[in-house]
Image 1 (cartoon, rainbow, N blue to C red):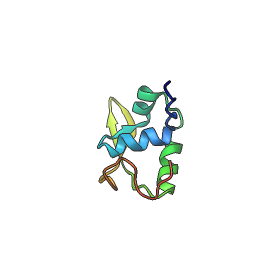
Image 2 (cartoon, rainbow, N blue to C red):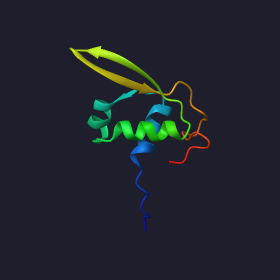
Image 3 (cartoon, one colour):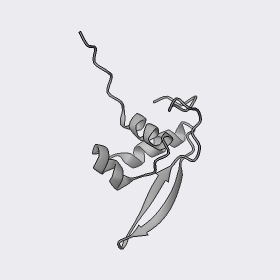
Image 4 (cartoon, rainbow, N blue to C red):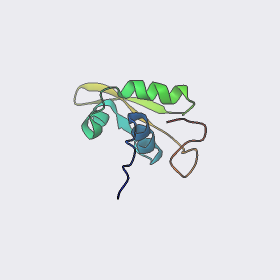
Length: 84
């Protein structure tokens, strides 16, 4: 009998994606996981002490921000002290 794996929260998904060295924009988060509350999750991670960088970019006449984490806090994809 298999046990069900607990579903990851959007905050966990975003955090793990950025810890893996990937950047993310609001559109990409929606396209990948249908996350409509992306900026709220970024705010929550920042409030918990995760240092998330951002940059405003212009492409195809549109202006938006890209978010990323420069250096992972540790190697197991979970920054110490951050509750997800």
